[in-house]
Image (cartoon, rainbow, N blue to C red; front, top):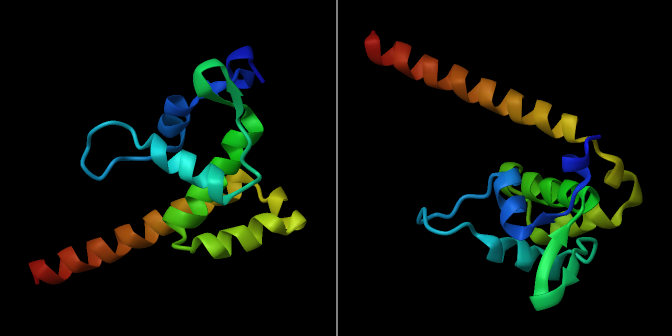
Amino acid sequence: MSKFESAYKTIGEVVKIIGLKSKRGGTPPTHTIRYWEKEFKQIKPKVLNGNRRYYDKKNIDLIKKVHFLLKDQGMTIKGVKKILNNVDTLKLDVNLNKSIKTYDIKSKLVKISNIIRNLKD
């Protein structure tokens, strides 16, 4: 792991890392991360002068997992809390999440190509 990867990240950098997008396309939705901090006690950033939050790799991985479960898998906050409170599931690999995303994208592409083929006929 390089020094850059192990460095603490600001809340704005975390938003960019996980790819959170604002619905209106304006400022990055840092409020979402702050809300998740309140809901999921496992997310504990380091808060320094001026109430600035700094996240280590462990917290960023946890936020990625919350984002994946809420946004990509469509789970509820209550459901994600149950998963995070179960010690065994904290060991879920981010690569597994990536492979699930890849499978979802592939299945959506197949559906779209079938629709296009049907429209051409």
